[in-house]
Length: 345
Ligand SMILES: [Zn+2]
Ligand SMILES: [Zn+2]
Image 1 (spheres, rainbow, N blue to C red):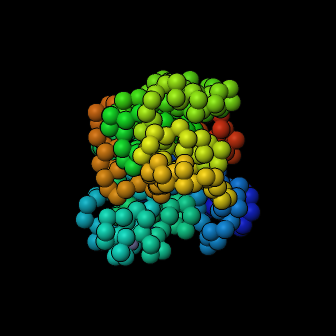
Image 2 (cartoon, rainbow, N blue to C red; image 1 turned 60 degrees about the vertical axis):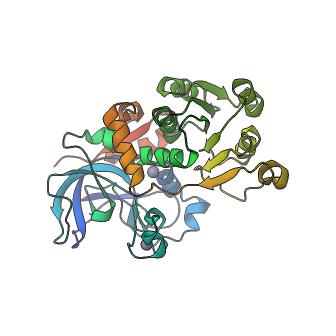
Image 3 (cartoon, rainbow, N blue to C red; image 1 turned 90 degrees about the vertical axis):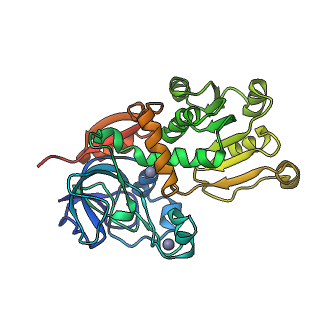
């Protein structure tokens, strides 16, 4: 089968022919029908310092956002059958460590598998997916749209931590997951949603999918602006990873407000005057890594079934998998994901 593989350290990747994976006793073999390019895949292609520092064993197949059809099930698989449509949870927990046993298996501490990193990913014709990380899709699921389950799950998990019900909430950075967070925040009960970005085009799109106000950080000071809009900003989700933006978020938040960090912070995060700005104001600062298994997936299913969140809003462009370089080039220009289709044989 064809697969996009990282063969050596440094920028780039290759399309190569490798044997299709085999399903172990607890695995599904899934024919990938559509996969999407994530910012973290872009980082693996570019081999950023953050990725290089992880020292992943090479080679591996890239990609982790996908939808496909089960074509084979391992002997011990109980919940899935051939023909099922599935999406994949990127994190593969061990099932037996302390985290796995205390409701945090999505951040398993025992050599957790991560698709497209230390486990072969989905930029290929087939993927081996452990049953524990398979998410069943509706029987009539649209594969292109459902390749976006995983990033929508990230947005929802961040919102679970931000507690949107009744809240005034700001979404900082309106890339695909930030845009999804604007829409899901409203569906999950936020009173008002404010979007911040420096791209006016993305801000305009955020207003279409659910944001009530959009602030262009290039033109306006976020803290001043947010205080014009609301006397109480309850929660912020940061997708930018920018030190400047995160520090602005801290000042924009109401006392006892919540900051949820999703965007990758490359270096050290310095918060000057921490005692007065954070501690005495009892701000809550947390982050997320992946999606909660499986409450996030439950909420996601409900939101999609209700029609209050629509994945079609986030399909930026569809292209053949072999054109993945185009998906990389277009990453910052699209409102939504580049979705790639393996060639039908
Ligand atoms: Zn992703
Ligand atoms: Zn574990």
